[in-house]
Length: 217
Image (cartoon, rainbow, N blue to C red; front, top):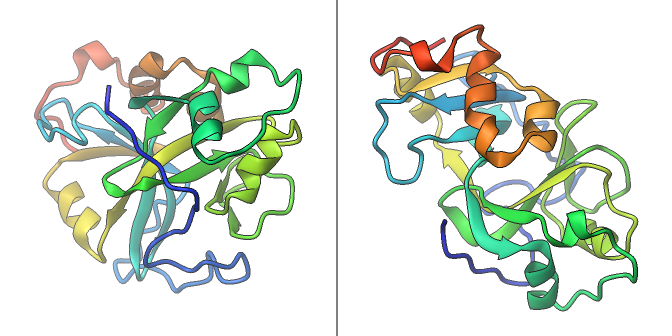
């Protein structure tokens, strides 16, 4: 379990800050758009960061790829996060929220928080990826959660995963990843330890039968 750290703001380094500009950058040069897809690390991947990871892709455009690892918890829970960023927790906030672990979202800006959640609410820097998943980088979403008015479903991460233009496409050609359309149930509802196998099953593959040298999807 990765040690965690956090600061009090939630900017997205190198990417648009306002909700009016998020998501309107041009498409990737390859023509490939994996937004709202899972990247599933092949069993042969021995990378200490991404080995065994499932990454939810939020954006894929001419600037590169931004995603969040959804199955690697840190040692931090929501109540610790609220305390560190000086947010008062509303009385009666359900234990399932305050006890929820924070994910290690990736190695980029791993001292800042990023939130995947069900759409709803007006946040200052937010992107609706689909009708079921939004991605928010502003602290107002956590203020809403602490106050008991936050999204119904969410995943909070420290850091995110980023690829420069063409980098992920090269990794796919080297069979480093499987790709499959994302499922919000896997993202938000399943226990963390079940998400890797569940993502593989979305491909119609038995995880036990997946050869370590299988090609990418």
